[in-house]
Image (cartoon, rainbow, N blue to C red; front, side, top):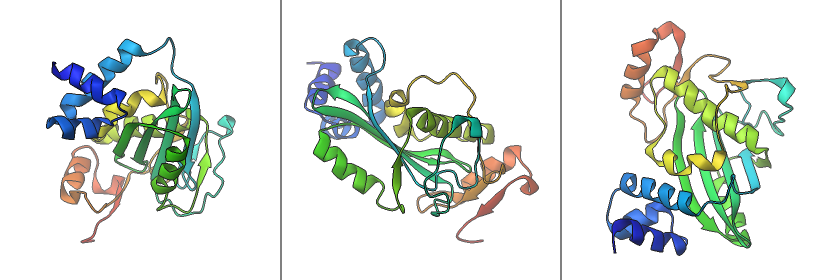
Length: 226
């Protein structure tokens, strides 16, 4: 049995790409393209039905959002501080869903982390949703278009500053749907790049990258040492 067949067998068991990589003792970057290829072999025409899409409240804080879109933040002052969590569930089988999660720094770095794709039933999804949004004041239902503009738009913005999305993003990119437009959201805090050091960041590296394209007067930042 070759590697692709072994990956296919584990996917049929509902294993995530990360779990498959651990089981086969290979890097996630080796598993990701095989998962996509297998999905393409069996995918029906068009994207699977979106059965749920959620984002944390406070997602719009500091952003300029095209009012014509009608996207509402149910708690705009809930203190998200530029960190946006998005969860998307698409139909997998009649009783199971393919679930993908994204953590986006919409002020600077774009997608910092991604989870999935995981195949869950309804009860597992409800439990996972509570865990996924546990650090936030709340979450709300959202149209997939808003999720797409937030996540993929933040990646486009981050690339103008020199940052690429986390390597875990590639296996879950397709859940957001096709992207061939400019985001209806202006990223950065009030239009300016704003970097806030996270617990796993290499802050010195982030600042070096920002300074390749911007002067210190063109962005704001907060680090542990500042």
